[in-house]
Length: 541
Ligand SMILES: Nc1ncnc2c1ncn2[C@@H]1O[C@H](COP(=O)(O)OP(=O)(O)OP(=O)(O)O)[C@@H](O)[C@H]1O
Image (cartoon, rainbow, N blue to C red; front, top):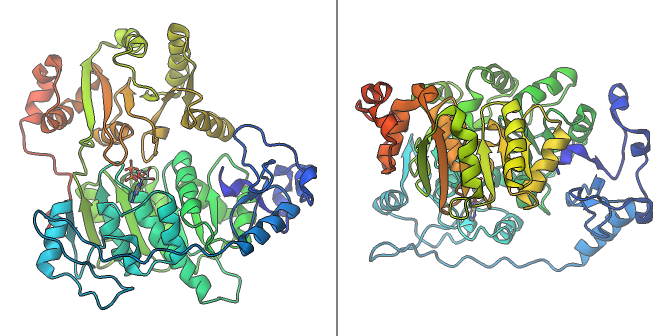
């Protein structure tokens, strides 16, 4: 549940022009816990009593139901002893037959790595960097002066050590450098920008700015679901720190989003359209925004989103810009260079290709046979590996297919797409993520960035419009190197992708259907040179 939906329990006043968006009974803050109703399934629960967590505690960002429980929560926190964070031991990096210590700012006596060791480390971890004076990678989260509480939150979230993209991005970001980062799907890019943002925001609080401040960072993402997820992760990692967030997405009441921002937040996570809308209707002080993140940058800088993203960028004064995606072309590279001088380019793993941990199974299926084929897969004990995500190309197609699969298999199957209300989208996603429903049929709204942890199978019922979207949709079947499978139905209608698809399958060593390899649309293109997707002239250093 995003924070933008709820109100601070301290002082609830809706801006007068948007007052009609709030129910009258919502305007009175519940003082006692018994005045609050029970939480319905899927609703936030009070951290103290478990009733409906209608508000957010300003100090802790926990869900709470009333002033009474807020007081109890703060009292509980005050009485808790500080959790000691283990001092990081000297980190030994196992290299074939060598190991060495890595510089740690907390332990300046530890010598920093020699340049050749850094190069060797990057080489081992498949990290490529391009740019001037690129900061060295870290190998543990406590190596670059992060707040203790943040390190503790990372440990509590099970992040025992940084992933390669985090190793390189976190120190570069902490040095205030602008970054263009391409890394495999499911490799931990989100935390790589959230960790430095949270550290940065906590530092401001330490400097004790007396004046009421505006946000310090903005993260843009192309879909509402992705924004929800990023904001949720920000809350988990920033828990207990002076770090508040606002979720600015369409489909939620604008008045509450404005109210939340006016009361002071450090981070805004939003979709470009709604954020522009909010900025046009309401004056928000953006002077303090010093970090601007474009998650899924290639999508955000495509026509459609580009003008809005650039409009927001121009409203900021020279922020540090951080851009991320698993698919970055030379065109995006060029465009990104215009957003900042002295940019660092970072590439980790094999971006621009489907995740290696996902087995790609491309099947030639004529359009009329597709439904029958998916029924067979879902009915098959051998081939169906729930929970599964089915991607289709249209909203109406999503609804119809969900109904048809339910009728044919008896399984409850739900659909998610942009025509549903935000309430429905949230509720359906929750039901899928909690395992209540094992199959979701969706359009591209879940195709990029979504961390569908338990999902190891995706079915591309309709091929997407581009090979990049194919890479992202296939990527939903694996997180952090876990094995998954992506089944894609292909036929003549997808001919514009044949060349690139055949190349991608060939590179992965996946079988190529005979109809695809024999097609005239395949041979002319796939026999050409390798796709130029990685950062051009990448240099290992
Ligand atoms: N250091 C870490 N240790 C353990 N788990 C991690 C770590 N960093 C991230 N994760 C987990 O890995 C999963 C994938 O992370 P994330 O969603 O950030 O990937 P991503 O690179 O943004 O992928 P995509 O390109 O698909 O959006 C998440 O479940 C996240 O919680």
